[in-house]
Length: 374
Ligand code: FE2
Image (cartoon, rainbow, N blue to C red; front, side, top):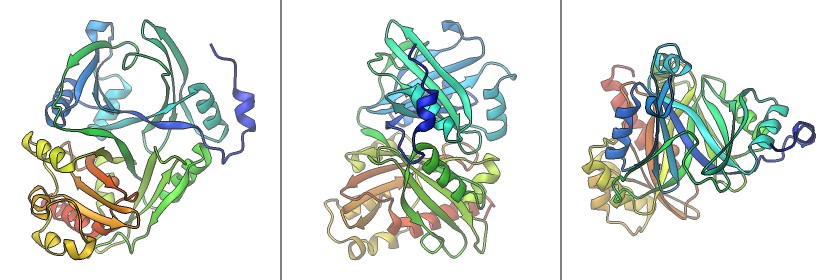
């Protein structure tokens, strides 16, 4: 066991960043982990690499680990009603429970976070097994969501306690790494959570979007993007803003019944190939009106991709100082209009597609209206 670090961490200035290498994994609590793993395996092309459940000695839960390049998902469901997992699913339906941060020192990260006012959920736990040494610890963030610090150094497996599985996904998908994870929080709570990421993790405000940036005829939101220095972790925080109709953020909050993760953006090196494969495997995306593409060249200038192909696939483009980006958004990936995915290819642009917000939100609102929630 490493030596106690409480005293040292307590003296660290609040602005010093907790050293985070990047996103380690995202864990979902779901109603049926077996079927959810099939969806991400067949639909999104993930390899299934690990399993734990009754056969591995677990009495309360069943979990699958899925992997694609540097993206790891963990899908967990409860085996009986009397667990925190079952209560989470009963309240929120399928959704993100934990956003894992990979760190060099999980104990120090945890103690530093607590010394800066974070609430501990799971104290540091070190496991040594045939794959090496693995340390994890968790703190609370918005809603029922947690951040898990993961220290895995040379740990060879996915997670301790899992049986290795080798179920290969579709290699055509080409998803690379998590780019950002967006949280929706209740009205007037964005500042609180932005300050939380600043104070606890030493993150900075990378971008701010006010209601003027993100509004349509009907609804609005405001957003602050919190990030670490190396920008390997970007965490936008949205809150609903006043509009003529119900904000899409409010619709999320009504159905998730708490603050929580709205979308996970994953990068690809070839968005045309990725989205073609996703569509072929049955993943549904938000639709974009034809007029968006008619005005595209005028708005973003010359790009490498064929606009007819982008139009056929529904891929959006935005240009900013450093270059441009291509992005597309799935429809919600469960019955409730809560979590969805974004696929993004960055070609020099570091932003979030501000030029697409209007087209995107109008598309979301068309879906919202179909659900009777606008
Ligand atoms: Fe995004």
